[in-house]
Image (cartoon, rainbow, N blue to C red; front, side):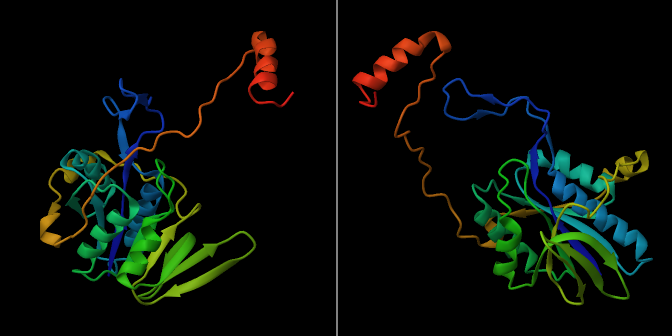
Length: 249
């Protein structure tokens, strides 16, 4: 049995984010990149399941869509215990593009379970997992707070606002990792760090997937209105503006 974990790489929450000098974008110089926390928990539980299955789960593979410089962080996933990694060499502009690229690659190799994190800590979209399930025509389990192995199948505990349910997974599906799936991220050991250097990162070019996904244009809309903040020392001016310009007073 094989488990595939989709991981995203995001800015460390402790990194100080700066705006570029032209005020048109984010300055990424000096930003520290890490595995998305939800994906890290999903990977942790996947590795634990492999250990608990006593050989029934043979591989835990991570897959990522991103540029070459992200391989440094992918090595951390390998150091945690993933057996290998797949990197699709592309810089997607939105969740749909990411999901389509993942789907094109995943469709080539069967997996028993595909796990995605609940959301990424940068955009908080919670979109890639459901989109991936639709594109691959696979069942989708959301709110997975517990995941267990049991005799050639998986058991998932799905938790929602007012109820929870247990689901037996005996065919490929996509599970969305939620709070509780793992107690804490797995810490890479020194041995894991050393062996990660020799583990394979399979490179998949965008062209080899015959992807027709391209960015046609990017446009920043201009703000429709401006906003001004008044201090307590400017109350008189505010009253005047409300009276003469806004016709409120």
